[in-house]
Image (cartoon, rainbow, N blue to C red):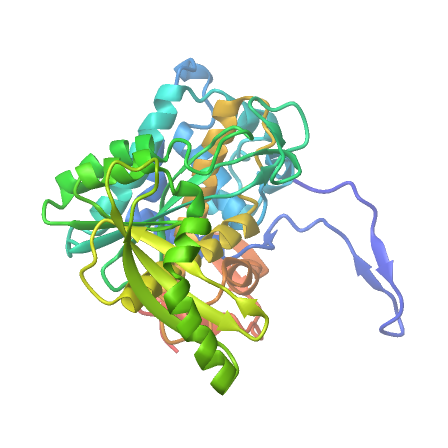
Length: 446
């Protein structure tokens, strides 16, 4: 596709002006598609997701199959193009066509109207199948080394909307119209990364805990069937401090650590420890933190439970915190340190939003739920790619930096009789990372 835009002139650098024209169909601005697409073929992520979809179109009229459309959307999102509108230009990108198994000289990819229909045709049954496929992909990736312990972190996040989307309501805590999706992350054994297992789109009026028990009831049998000896633990913030959820987790034999909102009774029970912390703070200054545990039963609870107390006093004053758990099998401080690690899922949510995870601008609720799955898939590919860069400067990089360093690399795509040859800039600082990643698939010479 050639652009009809006029030639642009930049006269301020050389004796003659620099002329710019958007007329090079053999050039891509996103060479990193090669890396993500190759990794995707290896792990089979988009293929598994596409297998959960059904195609009701008339076969003779189909130009773009479901797998190709899904990959086109996921790869575009991964490159920072969250809108279907961008497809009107990207559909002719030589490299994107190549990683979707089309030669640059062949038919262009799907356009914006085609991709919009693709998103809006998804049924509730397909969405359930997609949710199951995401969990299955996670399970299959751990078959070789089954985890002994799995930590589940659940969290909600505001998803601001602007329009008339189904179930978009005003949320007084957010102060705007929004959705309030629930995200579920899993951490295996001693791994660092919290892997997204799923996302449940909820209305803007949803409470933090709404749907959490039902989602866990759907998820846990799948995990236990795959890993019968698995020890499960759940970490939740104060929005999930609901007695019915405690009782259900205990009935399932699942350990949990949940932030407990403080009240006057809890503060009175913790006062001896707080008084000790105040005395120490007055003597030595700075911040003093002590840990303890006590038995506590709220009026709405059927039985008493353990509560871990963090008695902290800063120069600004008291800062007590409380956690509820079904049993105390170690030091209170260890439980508290374990709980604070759940805060890392806030970083995962931040990274998802770097890929415009909250771009739920479709009218239909089902289409917006489908978009969450597309963004989870794009994020998961970046997460897997980052895992292969251990020991490099990108080993702990967030997704926006990965996109900038690995994806946004210009390249000349040349079709020859022997295939395609992709030429990247000789001075590109991305070369060391490309070399490391390419070695996973084939050795390349210096």
